[in-house]
Image 1 (cartoon, rainbow, N blue to C red):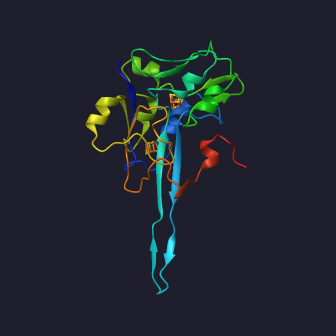
Image 2 (cartoon, protein in one colour):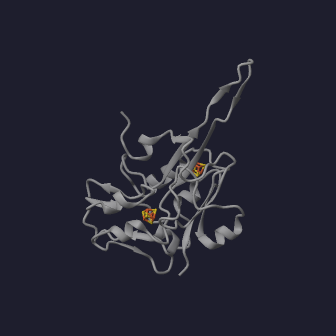
Length: 213
Ligand code: SF4
Ligand code: SF4
């Protein structure tokens, strides 16, 4: 089986959200649901040296994430209905709407907060890697839309070989050890390790789907 996945170049990403909006448009998603999220991760401070000078270790960068189509998907392991499977040709992790009972185990289990519960349909929903487009030889819509060409999609091992210096996670993502995500990230100079505590997600309400007050 070829394992497909995303490459994300955090040195290029400007946090513009075009990928997220193109996905919402293509998938015709309601206002409160997005299959791709762009995290703004920020931290650091200015330090007063006491002699009229200041130094700064302030940083800010963006991480655009859809589903990681993990090698060991926590969502699939915990679904009580057997509604989540890995496609045998592409390794994409897919939810079978017919089998899904909307119990939300995937929503609670995924360490990347990827699946969300469609309250109206009472179904778990998430990024499917644009499986239909991929089977027609096209790229996922987010990849096509990115104006900075910060996203690529394909055989994850080929992507890792094509881009030197990639890692499987940067903050605020959790450690990749849990689910072995099929993602290759080129870290920008400011990027921190997963589990970093020196920064914080600056757009928490946006990425967790909580409507703005
Ligand atoms: S990122 Fe989450 S939803 Fe996607 S395959 Fe991994 S555990 Fe499942
Ligand atoms: S469209 Fe590209 S540059 Fe804009 S947020 Fe998405 S990945 Fe980053």
